[in-house]
Image 1 (cartoon, helix red, strand yellow):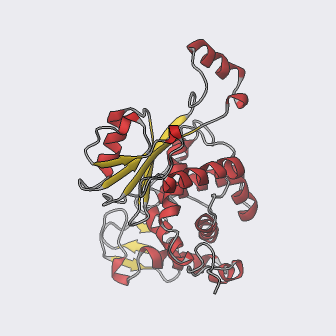
Image 2 (cartoon, rainbow, N blue to C red):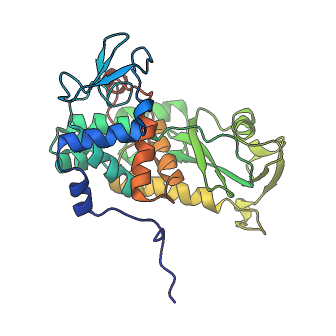
Amino acid sequence: MHKAPGKSHREGISLIELMEMFPDEETAAKWFESVRWPNNDDCHCPHCGSFNVQRKENRKPAPFRCRDCRAFFSVRQGSVMEHSRIPLRKWAIAIYLNAVSLKGVSSMRLHRDLKITQKSAWFMAHRLREAFASEEGLFAGPVEVDESYFGGKRKNMSNAQRKALKKAGVGRGSVGKTAVVGMKDRDSNKIVATPVQSTDAPTLQGFVEGHTEADAKIYSDEAAAYKGIDRDHEWVNHSVSEYVRDQAHTNGMESFWATIKRAHDGTFHHMSAQHLHRYVNEFAGRHNIRDKDTIKQMQSIVAGMIGKRLMYRELAGNAA
């Protein structure tokens, strides 16, 4: 019997099923509420924390009212959707698209598919990236650790950027790019990654030791920055074309980097250094829920939206 490809064991949701799940705004609102507060007793006021909450049958001026602080609120409060005027039905569709799109969803696609402005779609996309950010806890190992570089190509730089690099006397390679360090736990298949200002020993070793158990086995390439790390450590020497030696390799992390770079080239075309951490969070977060059924992926994203805020003024410095 031919083995089914990829993640075929997961139960997906077709576009027809998605539209049937969210036929109108009220249905979408009740779905978000059921995910955020799965039990009636879970619902609490995001303003004061009280569980003494009244549900408004007519949902006006808001679906819920706190009997203690007397504030009205909806499922949007206390989440990345707060103050958003985009209908919850469109938020649900955007969450679905982000869950099932391995290489991400551009703001232009959200703009076209949801019939919202590109500016609103760009803001929505970054808010959803905030939802992917999470702490995975300490990895027990074995762990692969690797770093990669992201940024524009020199041929695409402005004349001013080229002159600045030339004046500084710097060359090719990683110049003008942002370093990202990441690790994959082979046992759980989870990934954690973050941009870093430097790839020196204190930075990289601090990242590894801060995200792994003391007895975790670490695999890396031959970078000198990893030498002397306070973990059981093996490495492969890429400089002499050694990529696998028994269990020592970083193929899992390199596959993760390749996914982001394909998305950079084919979906986003540009990821600014200012917002790179959000893109990295998105791809690590999506990877970490890939084994779940689509509805569980969507629920995980909604859960990640709670307790987070992102204001437009935080993003408007540089568009990406």
